[in-house]
Structures are given as structure tokens and as C-alpha cells.
Length: 192
Length: 192
DNA sequence: TAAATAATAGACAGATCTGTCTATTCCGTC
DNA sequence: GACGGAATAGACAGATCTGTCTATTATTTA
Image (cartoon, rainbow over the protein chains, first blue to last red):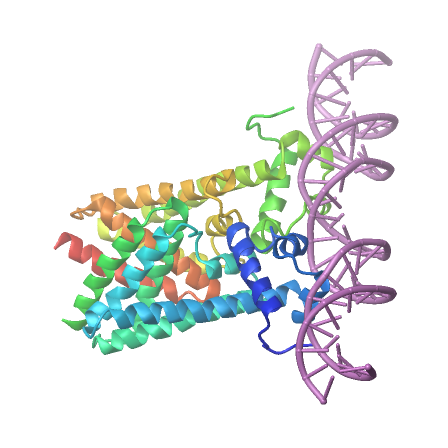
């Protein structure tokens, strides 16, 4: 009974299928039975790896959080040494993401939405991700010598989440560009 | 069979209860049976007024859209004649909303999230509201003589939606203030 | 080879889901 | 008082939901 985070092929495959279905259709819209049929895994295998559907979702969000932050960090790293370029690389990363074929909004915003109650484990897990990203932004703002790094990061977070919602509504990448140019303006103001 | 938008006490009461439950718990999380039990209305009454649950949700979103825009317009109107104050009144309105007891995020963002597919009627209806609000912002920006009213309105929309997501995640009103002060800065830049 | 571990299929429970249908009752208007 | 529209309760269908349990089969390890 691998209750803790023990990796296993079945568990990984289950999570990959679950990610695909939940992200495409929604958490409540996808039932356990469909997930099992699509992944070709027995029901008891699922319940041996996860205590409940809710726990599976939390594990998925935590995994996605790690992957997403690693992906952002890689994009920032590839942007070179200029602190300004590094910060704006986040918005270029956004644009690429919006343009990807299976983009379907932000799974964390969607989790906040589907589980709207503040104390719900899924809601809390989803929001933790947003806070973690904001911390990354704070460091980037600090490196760019913004006057109030945390404050600027707060604002950039608003722009980013707003851009994600807009991209989900329009299926266009334009909001990433708007957010990017606004971010550049704000950074200039915060360092001038 | 009042297929079109004919108002009736039962229909109104049904919509009021549906709003309360859906906004509190989510669209998929609340079943028809609970809605009927809470409203004390017979099942056939619901299906005489609405062809399906989906249609009820669309009607609710359209009603909420009208109410919300009227509420914003009232706040703007009460802000006086100064175009700057009128524009920033939107963000004060946001702050009041975030502080209200039953605030639970933006029902339109939540609808986009629960019905993520672009062509879904609920998804489309929800996004239409965001576009309508953006049009209001464009007019306010134009009145404030911003250089590019539509562009500024785009950016302000990002700030607003980001602030709503943040308020839903934190249960705090701070994001409205951040958005407001950023909006003030951007407006200054756009008119200087 | 024997024992432990992991995964399987599938029945089962009990609740819940949306939507349909019927038969009855209420209520205002003529 | 009779009529017609609106609402009622509740059965019903048929599907689906999460989670449990059992009995069997693989797979690995000692």
C-alpha cells in the first residue's frame, strides 16, 4: 500500500491519463469509470494508490505545479543575464503556452472555480501554486532592482492571471502580448 | 409554455435559488433535485420554464451580466464628472464586491472553467460578459482621453480578472487596491 | 520453489444525475 | 359554476457517480 509518494508505472500512467481528461473536460465532468477505461487500469489499482478522487486531483495539481514552475524557470534561465529580459521571459513563456494546441486555461484557476470553498483541499492546493509563482516573480523583480519587488510581483500576478483567463475565453495569444508590454512599462516605472 | 423570456414569480424564485446554490457550490456540484428541494418548486415547473439545466444556467448568466453591468454603471455614475475618478470607481466597486459576505469569485470565470470547451453555450455566454465589460471600460478610457482606449481597456480587463482570481484565492480585498493603483498609473501614462 | 506483493475483472452498494410522464389540484377569469 | 392554464407530487427511466469487496492471476523477491 504505497500511501506516500512512491512512484510506480501504473501510478504514473494513471496520473497522465487523469491529467489529460481532467484538463480537457473538468474535474467533476470526468468520472472515475471513464478514467479507468481510458487508462486501462483496474479500479482497485487506483484506490490502492490514491485514497480518493480528491486525493488524486491534489496529487495532480502538485505535480503540475512542480512542472510548471520548472518550465518557467527554464525559460527564465534561457533568457540570459539581463534582469529585465529574464522577467519579461515569463510573458514570452505565457505566449508560447497560449499558442499550444491543447491549451485550455489554467488548471489551477479552474480548480479554484470548481472547488470554490476556501477550505477545500483542492482549492487550497491550487492557490498555493499561485503563491509559489508569485514568489518566483518577486525574486525576478528584486533582481531587476524594482523599488518594491513584492508589490510589483503582486501586480504582475494580476496581469498574468487576467491574461490566462482572456486566452481561455478568446483562444488567442494577444493577451500575453498586452500583459508583456504592460509589465515592461511597470518595471520601467518601478526602477526609474 | 412560456418558452421565451416571460417573467413569472415561480421562474424568478427558481432563478434566485439557482443563483444562490450554483454560485456557492458550482454548476456541476449542484443537482436539479437539490435546487427543487431548496426552492420548493416542482420538477415540471422547472422544465416548463427551461428546456434544460444548461438553459437555466445560460439564463442565469445573462441575468447576472445585466445586473453586474448596471451595478458598475451606477458606481461610475455616482463618482461624479471627473473621467479619471469615473474610471477608478470601477476598482472601488471591485473592492466593495470582494468584501461582501457571499463573495465567491466571478461566476463567469467559474463558468469558463467548468465548461472549458470554446463552443459550449455556457462558455460563450460567460465570455460575452467579459467582452461587454471591456466595452464599458473602453468608453471610460476614451472619456479620460487615453491615447489608445481599447488597448488600455484590454489591460485594465487583465488587471480586473486577475484581481478577482486573487480575491477568490485569498479572501482578501487587497488585490482590488493593487489593481486600482496600477490602473491609475497606466491611465496617467496613457494621457501624459 | 515458496511467499509476498501488485494488479486484474467484475459484482455490488447506495446514492445521485437529468429529464419524462401522469394524474391531480389550485386559481383566476369569464 | 365552468373552463383553462399553471403548478403540484411523485413515480419512473436509464445512466452515472464514488468507493468497497472478493476471488483470481501475474510478477517479483527471498
